[in-house]
Length: 309
Image 1 (spheres, one colour):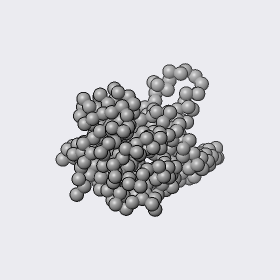
Image 2 (cartoon, rainbow, N blue to C red; image 1 turned 180 degrees about the vertical axis):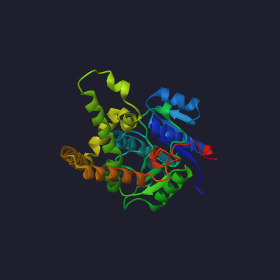
Image 3 (cartoon, rainbow, N blue to C red; image 1 turned 180 degrees about the horizontal axis):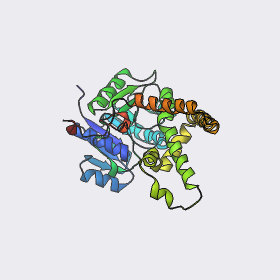
Image 4 (cartoon, rainbow, N blue to C red; image 1 turned 135 degrees about the vertical axis):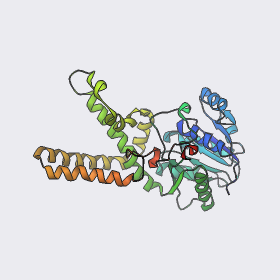
């Protein structure tokens, strides 16, 4: 059984705050660093953390687990700052949505006495900040772990058990596999949502009509476009080698749809639409009644487990 000890969360945003809250509810002592003192104050007042610090060193001192819950562009810099202060045997992880370069960099910069396992909980939201955090965000959500051949097997086992204890679903894959698949199921959908918003914003006519007639279909399709654009800028640039081929393939699919519509092919259009429906129905089989899975693709994700009873 995994023994809860002391954890340090570096960055108290939406994911970092939710992870801190989840760990504390699981019996961990949780300390945190954030450059915004109001985040630390909010987290202390709501007992999300036990202690908050305005520098990295005291936050990670004595911690058996350190999680870098910051944007991808900041992970290596903060990992480097934390490295000299890690206790022997400490396990370091992160929550970044791009993995290859980060994993390679973290494996190089940490001391030999500490162990790193890349991580990425698939439980995001268009909301941001500590005030959007939830102790149930990870419940039922896929939690991707990205070891490399040099990863300590015991450290990976520790992270798998930790994820299970937080009632998320551990999935192990290589950093390259992670970046490939997440580009398709997360990064490209964000760009598509933004492009659709850009399209509607550029339509001619009365500018008040979109707000008056857009309903749940448009709202749900474009929800992620409300996410932090600076964070997504960094994600898209960091993973562009995987995103660009998918964008080109997506453009080809749109061209295919355009041709079918131009030629009025009833059977072709029916096959095209049915193919999309069948894939999505199979993907989220057993999800919510409306076919929309919860955060991370599970009907239970993000829910208070007490509500299951």
